[in-house]
Length: 467
Ligand code: CP
Image 1 (cartoon, rainbow, N blue to C red):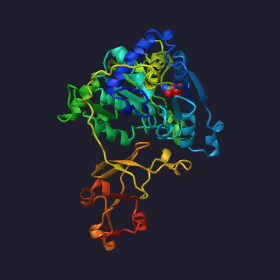
Image 2: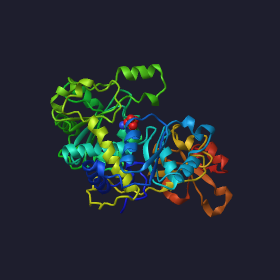
Image 3: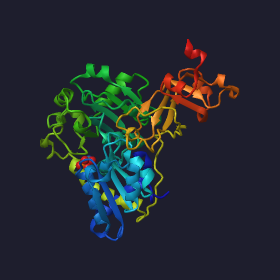
Image 4: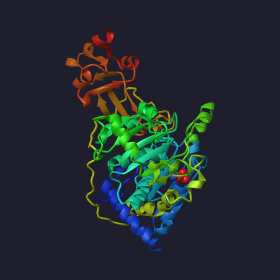
């Protein structure tokens, strides 16, 4: 399998073996950074950054220039025709005819997928709203591998704004896939989204345990966490004596503490934001004197604000400037591979930590919409051509996952497109909690957000609904 002409929209677009292959190319780039200028000569990268960036934008530019390619850039939505009401799809088609590869950062979740769907050239997601930031994850994993040689069985604590931090969302799935144990330490009110935790517990083979009550008992004695995802190869399994085993896990210390800032641009500037800021946890020299942090790498995707004290910079455990510096060789490797300028053998990697799940797809005009207001599928300029599309990730309860932003919803009403004997009097809708959800074949399933919508499609309530 080659990486040429592929997209990197989510971390799931690249397998463990491909990540390892990319890292071997990144090592090569780092060792001979001044000798790569022939690799992408004549190629053009379009850098579309519609949110602020220092590291991602400039390291992509540096990477392309080091490879001998050229860069065209747009950094302000207001200076593009998006500001005149042009759709992302039209922009993608046009830029796809000017460049060989697109790097896009956009405030809407799912925007990078739309660009990838329409550009006709490889597209790299440099951050889409709170959704994902897969190339940051590549830099993070590369740093961990450099420092610890492996990711398997590492114990990684995620700290700060786990609700809005797109870097942690991509990182979580990658860590679970590589067999790491994850400890969640969110700022108050900034817990990891339910759909991310749910996915973690259904698509990866470890165990997820909430630790709220236990933390109260342990306050002050060990590193407090909100939840823990324990990899299957961990010596302590949660099913037997979960509290005792969590305690053992916590006392064992962490290999890396991944700190993130409060994403204030994702919240309205209210008194609530002041409260979040006031209670935001800070990593400083004092915290790092705890025995659980003795050998801990301190990581941060940067930029930092107040959550990581400057006094930590001189500590040999601090990794964040290395992480940022690795952005150039890692992105050089990615660009060269996606552009087909470099070929690499893909090693057979251990991918036994994830389940392979092929979910049925739901795509009908039945009124079901993603509930995430920041999803690209809900934006006025995009609804003219984007039809809501979901994966059916569960039938009990019926749960749909948006293919753009991956938020989930649990609709309440269903029907079949093949009603009994084709007679109109049998055109009935049912509760999504009834046995019909399993009886109707997924390809015939019609899902409604409300009874009103079902009736607008000329369906009548079944006897069950009338009760
Ligand atoms: N880590 C990261 O995405 O940094 P920038 O926002 O500066 O690109």
